[in-house]
Length: 258
Ligand SMILES: *Cc1c(COP(=O)(O)O)cnc(C)c1O
Image (cartoon, rainbow, N blue to C red; front, side, top):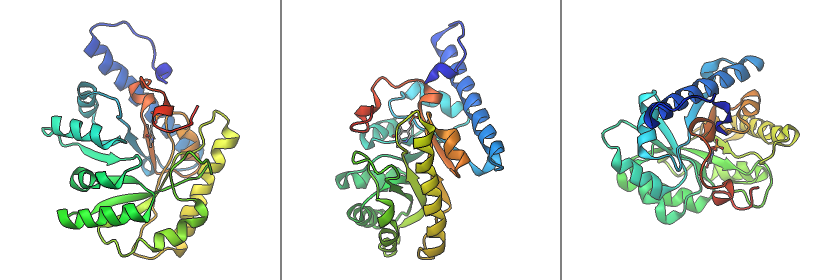
């Protein structure tokens, strides 16, 4: 994925890492701006969430120096380690991956956002833990927009009854929806996932209980974020286009992806 970054001579590892990150960041922001322009949107309508799973502390610190403040992570154990090593920085952690109920206590303690709410059992466990911590948490509901068995998320047809049942969980501040589109280089297969999400969001704005908000649409990753923006994303979650290819294949994170 870092094929976006121009080749450059290695001066020292650190200097070139930093330069690469800065170049990648400029490239991604440029792509975001162009996608906004194409679809008649303002650049400020779309937020970049850098995804830092597998990215080590030194490069995280570089990203912080480059002005990034909120980082997306999908494994609780990994973010616990990083968060405790970087308490000197004012970093906000967004948890974007499937969460097991036995890990809710950590998320309730240090996350500023949770993007992968996908069951009532989890909602209930998180809410209880947040009450105990005296905190509230911004959450997004993960939707399975591709219909693939291997993907987490609420099926689109079940979303309205699901969100209605979230109302009693007062510590969960529902802000919108999150999805992973089908993994495909074929735009004709990817775009419908994003389009479905936008329609779902519009419908929830009309029909969901007033105490829940659906302004946020988190969709689009390194391989498909320009399409997601064209279809209405307000947050794009980008890892490899910023930090380079991960050492482990996607199948490590998402069973059955290519
Ligand atoms: C890793 C991850 C991303 C970012 O994927 P890239 O291909 O590195 O941009 C986005 N969303 C979730 C849920 C992820 O786990």
